Each structure stands twice: as C-alpha cells, then as structure tokens.
Image (cartoon, rainbow, N blue to C red; front, side, top):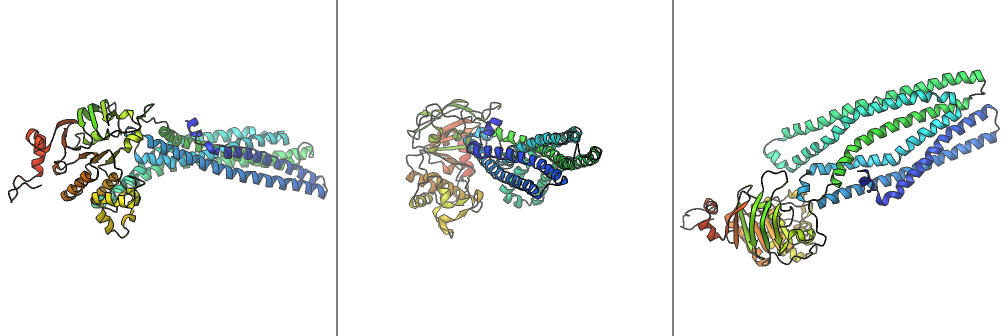
Length: 584
C-alpha cells in the first residue's frame, strides 16, 4: 500500500527532498540558538565588552533569520509537494475507476467513491505533509535538544529521564484510546454522503411525498452519530494538553530549584545562569516535540484508514482486460449470441441469462420485449462488453467481443440507457459527447431526427441553454430525445435503445423510429421497449422470459405463435375501436 501511495509523488520528488533538507537545517539551527544564548548570558555575567555582546547578538540574529528562512522555504516546498501528491492521488483513483467494468463498480457505491477522492484524499494529503515536515522535524529536534541538554548540564538533563517516559507513555495511551472512535468516524462518512446524495437526487420525490422532515431526521441521525464519535475521540485527545502542561511545569520547577541549588553551592563552577536558561528552553523544546510526535501518531492512525480505502480502489483489478493483440476495427454491426449464459457474480445462485442463441444481421432492427427482470437490459449490456459472459460467446462483426480493443468496440456501439443522464453544461456540449467534431448543422439534423430540435429552439438560449446537473431542468421526454440525438451523432454500427422512448408519446416515438431508418439505415438497431407499437415494425422481435428468449420472429409470426406476445399486444390495444379498426 505504501509503495502504491508513494508512487503518486512522481514529479514532486524534488520539493519533497528539499523539504527534508531545509527541515534538518532548521532543526539544527534552532537547537544551537539556546547554546549561543547561554554563552551570551555567561559572558554578560563576567563583564563582557560591548563588542563581544554585539558579536553574540549578531550571531543570534543571523541564526534566527536563517532558521526562519529555512522554515519558510520548507513550508512552501512541503505545501507544493503535498498538494501535488494529492492531485496525483485523485487522478490515479479517478483514472482507475474509469477502467472498471460494471462488475468492479458494483463493489463500490458512488458516495463511497466520492468520499475516497475527497475526504480520504485530504486526510492522506495532510499526513503526507506532516511526514515530510513535522515528522522529520520533531524527532530531530527531540534528539538534538536532549543531546544539547546533556552537553550543557548533565545533572539537570536527568529530568528528561523521568519526564519523557511519562509524557510519551501518556500520549501513546491517549492516542490508542482515541483511535477506534476516529476509525468509526471515517467509515460512517460513506453513509452520511450517501444520505446527502440520495436526498439531492430524489429531491422531487421527497417533496412529492412531503418527506422533508423524515429526510432531515435521517440526516440528523447520521450527522449526530459522527458527532458523538468525534466528541468522544476529542475528549480523550484533550487529555494531552493538561498532561503536557504538568510535565512542562514539573521541568520548570525542577530546573529552577535544583539548578539554583547547584549554582549557589558551586558558585557557578558546575552550572551557571546561562546553562539554566538553556535548560529551560531545551525542556520546552523536548516536550513540544513529544506533543507533536503524538499528534503525528494520531493523524497517521486516522489517515491509515483513509489510505486503506484509497488503496482498495487502486489495487482493484479490472475484470475486463484487452487481449495481447486486440482487434482495432469492427467490420460491421452484426451481433451473435452463441449459447450465452451470464450471472452477475460467481456467488449468484441463478443465471441472469441462460443459453441465449440469437443472430442479428448488420443493419437489422430488432425489438426486445419482456417483463421486469426478464434479462432485457442484461442482454444488451454484453454487446459493448460492459460485462463478460459466464458461458458462450458474444460476437460483433463476426469476432468475439473479448478479442477487441475495448475502446474500439465501445466506440462502435451507442447506448441510450433506461436512466438517461445529461451532464452539467450546455445542450450543445452534451450533444458533442456523441461526436466532438460534429458541426452545428449535423447537431441540428440529429436533433430534428430525434424530435428534439423544436423544443430546444423554444428555449431563449437555444442550443446554448444550460443543463443543470443530471438534467433536472428538462422533462423526462426531452431528456430522452436529447440522449437519442447524442447517440445519433455518433453514427454507430450498433445502436441500443434501452426503453429510451418510454417518456414520449406514440406519435413522437414513430417519428424517431422513422428518423432511424432514414439517417442510419446501415446501423443495427436494438430497441428494448414496453410498448408493442415501438417494435412491431422491427425485422425481428425477441420475447424474453426468465433470462431466456421465449420466442423470436416478426410481429405477425409472434401474434400467431407466441402466447406471451399476443397477451402483451392485446393488453395494449383496443380489441375493437368505435370505427371498427384496431387502435394503438
């Protein structure tokens, strides 16, 4: 895990190393300042000349400026290194997610992935900055201060033999007691973010059912749960402050009493005033560095959980991989299912698809009907290799989809999904997802065929109209037509419509299908629909039931030979309209 995370430093190795060097230099200088100050005080006591005072004073000022400069430079380089590390880390996590198949994505919910790329990354970034700055400075300052204390006054330095174990042991016990609460907090962030995301996405449903108070209570419980854990942990960590203050005062009293006793008894021969002053300073330095080490330990322990969660994404191996020498051209839009069976996971007890045999010629229009859970969407998701089959093979253009370069295969397939999604931006920017190089004329033509041009031009800004996140400022039917136009701009070899005209009326649906025939006659079109009217003129209609193809044929063939199809048709049509004709 550490090796993978360290790999995100990359081009920021130089500021990382410079931070280390300047921190070491700063620590050395700060530890020598009390030593020079002690010599100055002793010199003053012995009646030093003004020139000698200026010499000591100039040296102290120079060392202070140099220490300040080193600290400032280290602060700049550490900020640059940690911010760059966090940027690379987010990039790597996001890039890894883009390689995931649906099978991989199913392991992580969207709220969890957002938390890992925001809160968890921020925690790891903070720990990285502490590691290259404070975690280096604190041990160095601790060691140098203790060494210099023993050099200055061995007898008084013995106080650290008592204080350090007490302070270090106390800090360790406090940190260990607080860690379980901190770990619980970060695991609960996922649930909190999930609650927020769910509420925002379903705001219209919440208001439609007047469930605002229920959602407030649910969010309040999640937020309150985190608050309780944080409060418990912070109460424990708060013990650090009185513990440190007690040790500081003990050290101060010990140095003043015992040091004064030695100074008076020895007449300044063993320990002088300068040494006492230096010992007080070194005492403060030692205990402050112990405090910093404890806070580093707390922060690292907190971020360890965040690092583990990030690493979980980074080490997730995509279940779909390209072959060693992938095919980079799709010959045509033919689709063949040869004995295909599929289950979503190896632990699943039931196949989502069983023994599917289906052969679709290039350019054909195929309708797919079936009840909820019959496997319609699962079937078409195997074509662009969003999942891999469990048994059998899916062939596109005569080649197994597993032989293709994944990007090449998916670039030849356009899907308009059941849940239509538009991104934040203008209508034009959303349409250009289908073809980034499309001209304004091509965009308008695709929208006319998708029956979207008229309502787009009714907006004051036309094609420059801003789409809110998720397309919440357009209706369901408008969203569907925009997504269809986006797919048409791609001019794919295979077009898949997964119940994507359910929100438009039958007349508009018929016009859209006519546009398909005129605009992309050579494209293979697979239309999943709930309405018979949407597929009755298809070259082939497949009726699915329990993950199998129950029947396949034309409209007339299925009416005469398939009870399921005939029942659906009769439910959706009037058996006898007033004018004696069938009505749809």
